[in-house]
Length: 177
Length: 150
Image 1 (cartoon, rainbow over the protein chains, first blue to last red):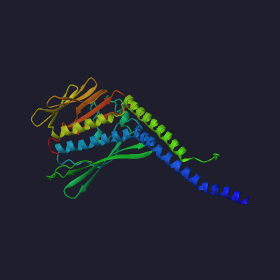
Image 2: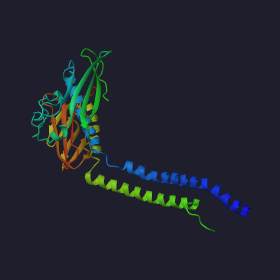
Image 3: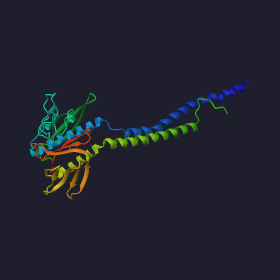
Image 4: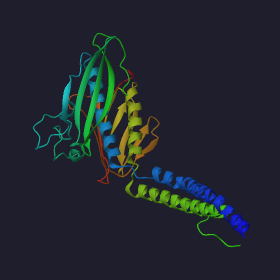
């Protein structure tokens, strides 16, 4: 009788770790099987608005760099001066001057205001433009254009930089990044 | 044979995993399909068209010597005095015509396309595009003529 009880208890004690292993295996397989769903969900997710804001900031930085290139082409001694972060549109609630590179570029030849026929005001109001200029060895200047904006209370910046030759240099103009 | 509660057989696990994979695949396909529908409805990939404009205009202004503002567009004049490229808004769509006058659709569903020269710099083109969908991002940037310099 005692032997019978022991033989019944033996397989039960062996079965316990097997159950945990099975459970872990099940969880692992289920986790792996769910990965395609997570992956497809991630790649098909609609990009958030901040990506578009970043894209527009990049376009504005491109505008500033191209303005510098155009001005440098007309006047080889031109050197962009440094500036603090300045707004790119003229708003009634701010007395800060509009950035030099965004003055008079509205369709009416004025600064971009709320009544701008190009309907850009509300899209550009959040941005400000800052210019840093550094002298480098090798008769070169480095200009860095920062376009900054706020995203959920955090300051975000997009920047382009470009190498400019000194006025008496024959060095070709570098590429922007 | 008495079946014990709380146990999961290997066959059961494989069956469950197979069902889960099938459900996950179905949901993934549905999600992908829905995402494509949303993309079409709101024309979410407007930046693809914008990137095409950036790419083409940067390429054309590298060889261009002069801008010529024309009706509903702009012509970039090359070194030979002939247009290297012409950009024109036709039926709310922006087309690029090359030297062979072969037209290429760049972007559609535009309410307005504005090409104008900078008030002080005649070698700087300011481009402003407004999509028909007001919720979409506008395009605003400039392009300087390189004339083969860089």
